[in-house]
Length: 146
Image (cartoon, rainbow, N blue to C red; front, side, top):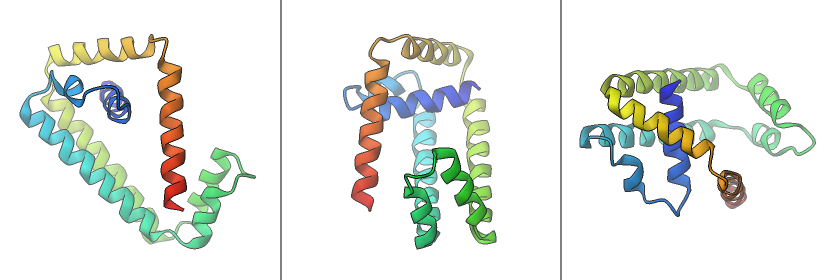
């Protein structure tokens, strides 16, 4: 749970241009920073390789506004080939391994600092604005990709 919060916090900061990336990583050792960067790059690469395997019909499912988000997800999952399912499964396993690896490197003090940062992020008044900015950026990115 802590790792998920840590990764979510790092992603929130990474997507918010007003925050300096150094603030996020100031409590991590250089090795931990490099580990996170390497893992983040691997996840991005795997995501892109999965996207490259999608058929036109599957892409259409993802952009079908007549379906809810959950319905689009379910329809996509049902349309996946065995090879695509294997890629997704491998990606999930990679992420689980990454979580364990990071969890083993974080000190008790770092865990407490991350918990405090997550708590503070949840309690900020501008949290809604940050989330809205993130949504807008994601939409813009998706529209550029189409």
